[in-house]
Image: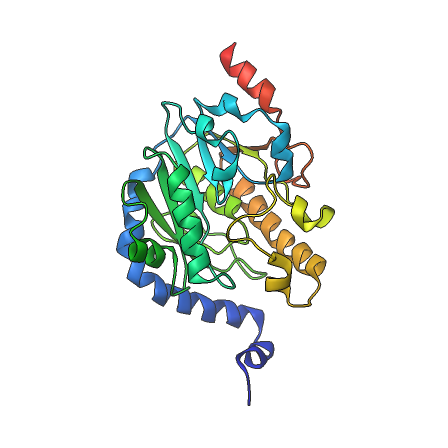
Length: 292
C-alpha cells in the first residue's frame, strides 16, 4: 500500500507547498469571518511599544514587575510565572496569546490547560487564540466547555508555508487573512504586534536554546499541564537535536523576514539566548530611559 508519506516523498517541495496552501485555504474559509474582526486591531497601538514574554529560562534573571504599566503579550504558559498577576494588573492593555493546539496532546489535556489558564488571567486581558486545520482546535475546546466567555477574544488562523520557495508577501502577515504557519508562538506574537502598529517590540524569555539544556531546564518552570514527556511523545525515537536545529532554522528565517520587511524596531532583551537576529537591548536601561 502506498502511504501518504511515500506519496509526499515523490513530490517536489514547491508542489507540496502549493497543495498544502490549497488545503489550508479551503479550511480557512470556515473561519474567514471570525478573523476578519481583527481589523479592529490594525494599527491600534501605532507609536507605542510592547514587550513579548516567553518562557525561556533567561526570564528568571529579569524583574518583570516593572512591566505592570507596559503593554505586554504573555505567551502560551506564561500565566504560571510567579509575578504574572502583578505584570497584568496595570491600567494599560494586556494581551495573552496561545499557539494553535495539536496532537499528541489529548482533548482532556488541552481542556485541563485552558481551564487552569482561565482561573489566573484577569478579565480585562485580551485573548489571542490560534487556529489551523486541526479539527478539535482551541475554538472547539472553548465552545464545548464554556471557557473564556468573560474575556475579549480574537482569533487568528495559520497555514501559509514559508519554505524554500516562499516569496514574502505583506498580506501573509495580515491578521485578517490566513497567516504564516510557524514553529513557535513568538513568531505569531511578532506578527500580531507588527499588525497592531507597535513602533518598538521587545522580546524577553525567547531564548531558542533548547539544545543547550536538559528537558526540565527548557523553561522558567519545570513542566506544564500540557507539556508532559514532550520528547518521548513527539520524537518517538528520532533525534531531538536534529529536529530542533531544523525547526530553529525555519524560525530564524521567519524572524529575519519580519525584521527586514517591516519598519518596526525589534529588540531581544535576553542576553543568554541564542537569538541573534535582533539587536540586544537591556530591559533596565530601556525602562530608565523612558522615565528620564
